Structures are given as C-alpha cells and as structure tokens.
Image (cartoon, rainbow, N blue to C red; front, side):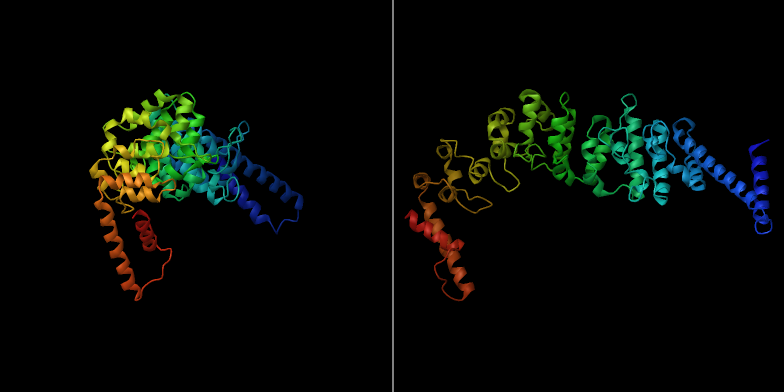
Length: 420
C-alpha cells in the first residue's frame, strides 16, 4: 500500500471517529483511539525530528524543510538521542550545504520556543558537549573546516546575513556573545570582517572573559600569531590614529604590545606588527609608543625611524606629544635637543609654548624654563601680551574687574610674575 493511500484511509477513519463522538456510548473505544492518536502524533514528531537531524545527508530544498517544520513544528524540539542536540544545533555540525537550513529552523523555532523562552529558536541554547558551553550562534561564527575553507566560511556568512535580516542576529550579540573573539581565525576571515564592519566599536571595547578581546586572543593562542595579526590589522582599518588595539591596556594596565612580546617574543611580535604597519607608515606610531610603551620605544624607533617626523591626529609633532604626556622626564637631553623652531612653536592643543608646559608640569623646575627662555626671550613677552589680551576680554565680558582668583587667566598672571 502506498503512503498516500494509507493516509487517505487514516483520514477516513479519523473522520468516522469524530462523527461517532457524542453518538457512541463506549468510552473505552475513544480512550483506545486517543492513545493511538497520541502515539501516532509522537511518531510524526520523532520521524520528522530524526529527518531534521539528517539534513546534511538528505539535502532537501529549503522550501521542503520549511514545509516539514511548519506542518510538524514539534519536530523542532526533538533531541537527538546520542548528542542531545536540537535540529538547529545539529545542523551546525553538518556539511557546508546544510548550514543554509539554520535560518529556517531558527525562524520557525522562535515561534515555538525551542529550547525555552528567550532562547531565540535554539540559537542561544548551549551545546551540552562543549566544554565552554558555546551556544548555536557562537558556534556559527566559530566552527571551521580546514579542508573546505572558503565555501564553509561563505555558507556560515550567508546564514549570518539571513539571521540578521530576520532580527535573530542583532548588533548587541557581537559584544554580549563575544562573537569577534570567536570568529578571529584566518579560516573564518569573512565572518570576522563582516562582524567587525557591522560593529567596529567592539574591536576596541569588546571583552572576552572580562578582559579586552585582543588580550584574550594573545593569552589563548600560544603557537600562532595569526589571530593576533588578524585582529590588529582589522583594528587598524577602523582606528588608524590610535594604532588600532596595539597599545590597548588590560585590567592590570598592561598593553597589548607588552603581552604579545611576553607571549611570542619580541622578534616574532614585531614581524607581525610590520605585516600590518609598513616601515614607511604615515601613522604616528612613535607618538603612541613613547606615551604608552616607553620600554619598547627604542625597538619601535628602529623599525619606524621616519615616524619621528610625523604629526598625530591633533597636529602635534613627536616632541610636542612627548612633552604633553610628560614622558620626557627620563630623557635628560630632551630640552637640549629642541630646535629654535620647536621652542617657539605653540602646542596645537594646549596653545602653550614648551616653556609653559615645562613650568606647569608636576615635576617642572624653573631652571628648565629659564633655559628655554634663554633660547628665545621674546616668548615671555608674547605670552604676556596674550594673557593681557585674554584678561581684558574677560573683564569686558564680565562687565567689571574680576577679583584675584584661581581661574585660568589669573593662574597665568601669577606664572608671569613668578618668571619675571
């Protein structure tokens, strides 16, 4: 008997039972029928559920899968006896061709609370076999196929895009589910770049296990610098003036460059950096090295000698940045090497001459200030004129002569008296 004929006869039988209800006074009959119907319904669920776990072998069309789960939605919650996975989880571990079913299973699954409320149709259900309890969404960005890299990565990326369209992959997931860290593998390059473009802020602010993502990558990849290089290169794309995440600090104040050198060694680390930042870079890398990683400044200077002549995003020269950050204190020759032009140049941010910055520094001393003024005495008079002009403007705006206080102009007046 064909399947179609069998179901036609079953349909006739069910119609008969429905008509008999209320007319036949035999409760035992109806109890037997109910038990049979329940068994049959469970059988449909089991058979369809098993079929969903075999999608990687059967490879039906997406419309066929949609028909299956819409017609028998209980199959979406059928767990494989061996793995205890839902169909949407099982599909993650399938063939490249089966990844396309994930959006269908998730979209239907959310209607029926697969895995529970707020589990997004099974996407946020943890894999019970995973030591780290990664959920379906995390595994979607993380799993790899070393023998089929590009097609596998492409299939997962396409599934991610479909989930995003359906609102099942949202921007906040990138941080909350630590997706950038999980996708940071050369064999998941397209997924990683897609997430980075969507939420580039996570490159600098994202964390994993409570530490910045770049630091977690360094700590967890002992043999390969590829993930570190990949993350650094992408962060440079979106945050070039900050030199990407290279000088990002962890909770203990340790920079990424220092963590990398401690993990991989200085030679391998700088080789990775130079793969991302060429020697003739236009990025102010020495500005940042002097400020955030002075212990490696000489190493950076060797690899990026021409960067000493660059200006940062604020328009500061290297020496202006060093002076502003007070990182000159360990360099006893710093002020001696300032040229006449550098001594006379106003800082584009503070609008101060170098002698003023030195005078107001916490460790400033008058001997340094007098030395700088001796190279160009006219600077003090220029500054006096500037302060006088600002004080006049302040009085005109206030309508009366201000009392001696602790405002910016008053402080500058006292500084002039101190120097003269």
